[in-house]
Length: 400
Image (cartoon, rainbow, N blue to C red; front, side):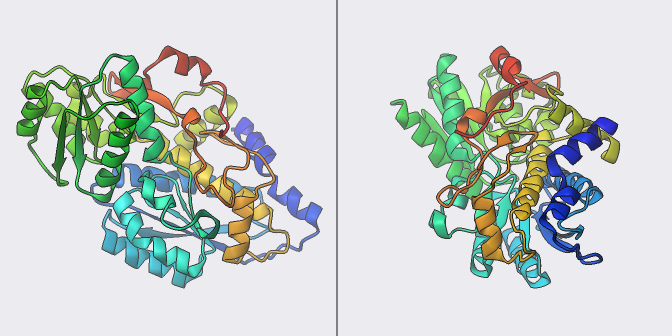
């Protein structure tokens, strides 16, 4: 615990910074930060982990002074994974007077609310949702939409590159009909086209589908040697269980939802061997990660069900704090905070990555493809799919 405190004080140093700036602390006043995500409903397995990552970071930051003596106060809205509920929650956050919002796990939910934050000129930092269009909706210099998760435009080619190296080139794509599935399908098809390949079968399905064996049989008949799935919930397990029922022993790969409990617990042995893109695997490979894992266990006293969601949200909260440190007069109006995020002068040594200028006027995505590793389900948990990733995990990568 003492090591954790020393690490937090070293990377934050809030009280020391305030004294050095000679700014009088505004005791008793809080700084409101919005948090929005699916804390109930079918996406709650990673929404709750996102929230817990934020809560852990805020507890630590407040313990060493908050922002200029002002503790962070979280204003939490549950979007239930529903775009309309998310829109209402976003509007309420803006009306509440938050200075910034951390949130969204579902691409389709986020898409409906982006305009709320853009119009209000309040930064939104997305720690989980990965749909490529989210940070592309507005011209980058004008955009108030930032992201600390790996967008699908880098996840898809990363996974495609890996499966080609393994000799799997006859790809069947299974994508749901949400905004996430729509964007993911386009990204996978583009990644395949860049390698002069085309999917041998494409299946689309609505959330909640219980049986995809007909589509799986069609993919099998088309000669597919790998299934690339793009959906966020139990549908990934439906695909895996369908393959098992058909006794079709081909690998299942995809983006990070294949690391979620809905897939691993829902598919059980059928999930074994599935591979996915990851930014963080819960192993204490260095002091930062060890401190984070220890602090999480101490605070929540339960296994970290979706480590990426917690780690990315945790880092996001610290990036917001570091940006606030760049505002020396206490004026945290949206345009000033946007500029501070785009011009971070301090390096944040995070859990997922080392963040040196993670954002800029022309780039609102903090994660680059070189930060990814391939994860693999083994004995019901996610570990490294490649020995070389495990070896280099001690070195936390920087954006390129």
